[in-house]
Length: 219
Image (cartoon, rainbow, N blue to C red; front, side, top):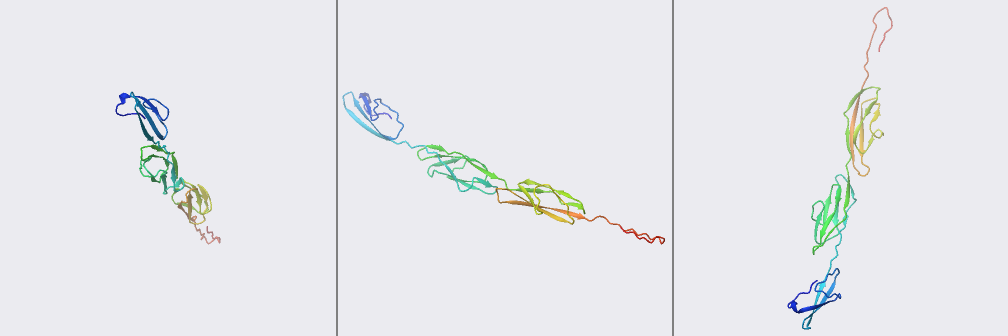
């Protein structure tokens, strides 16, 4: 804050309300500051100036849901400031943003008199939806065992009650095996099927028609 006015050349003395006696002073708090100036002839003038310091408020971010979302879901993040301008770390400039990906998000706000503040970052985690890939259908002979395998993310549960991959099965007839995979945090499942076709064992008939032999053999 500095004292200015006509006839500065004649003003030799300054007395501020802070007790300082220089022409200019520095202040760091809100208040009403006054200065009395006395010129060479002893004439005095008093000037008063109100100073208001607006604190730099750090915005906070709130969400309308959990900060852990599943693929296909979203969450709305909002700045605590309702006046001024907004710039989010993803480039958006509204008070609230809708987020459907994982990442770290912060917002910088500027109030009506130009004071700027930046929030702490909020981390959004996204869990991928479960996926599954099954092997092709297979054929096998009666009485044999086969191995079924699937790949993907999550926990595999077969309709037969078996868990994991691969599993071993011994069907006695053509059977379709269903399997599902689910994520522990997301109420979403994926499923697939593998059909095992069981072929009967080859058979043959043999008859001995020699009249000298009475035994007929079939197999």
